[in-house]
Amino acid sequence: MTPDAFRPHRPEAPPPREACVFYHSLDFPDGESVTGHWDLRGRFDDYIGGVALAGKTVLDAGTASGFLAFSAEKNAAQVAALDVPDARDFDRLPFDDSKHYLDRARWATDWDARWYRPLRNGFWYAWHRYSSRVEMLYAPLAALPYWDRRFDVVIAGAIVEHVADPVNAIASWARLARETLVLAFTEVHDSDDLLMRPLHGWKNRNLDYCWWRLSRGLYRKIFRDLGFEVEFRRATAIHNPAFVNDHRAPVLVERPTIVARRR
Picture: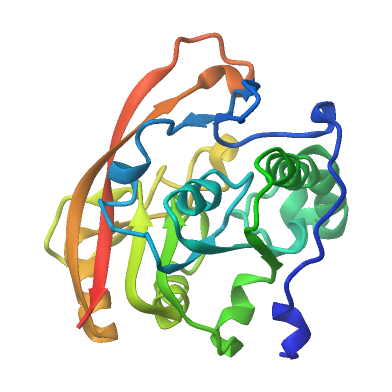
């Protein structure tokens, strides 16, 4: 893996708002607001498990449209944001009628146009609106074991369930964390046994981007082996079904946030 894979990305020009998708709701300094799939406004501190960020170096892994990165920056952290370069780096559950399974190149081209490029635009739209200094990097998850940079705090928000190999993903994020890794708002199976189970029974083609729910015992074991002590905190977020053209009202969702501190 070449060092260029981790070179900070040159800021992109501000895109028009209509070319953007926002994964999280955002309020901008001039009074403009955008509505996202999830609303964490006023909930950031609880969402990251109460971890203090002021004066810390922070990596937001899987930044999407940047809410966690920009919130960390507002909390006086020096922030870098990380996301994949394009849709080719997204894994999906395999089904016999899945475009991702049958023709991944065509699927990736379509997904880039319909989802990932608008989401990436959302980050750069917000970056300019905030006059942000967040450093942006684009590198695949598989590249992280080759990266020699370290951060005081690494935050991976609601992302564990979206990776096919969560154990090695956790190890990759933990390796980058000098002090603390936060797995924010993460599904946890309520068991002290070492379990990893399908999140949706491997049956729902409409949720083929959701893979695993790990048990509390497995999280403890993984982090113990990596040299971390772990605690489970309560986090909440507002889910906005209208984001996917579902007319149900927004609902409050509660999930654990896992805070792992290096021993």
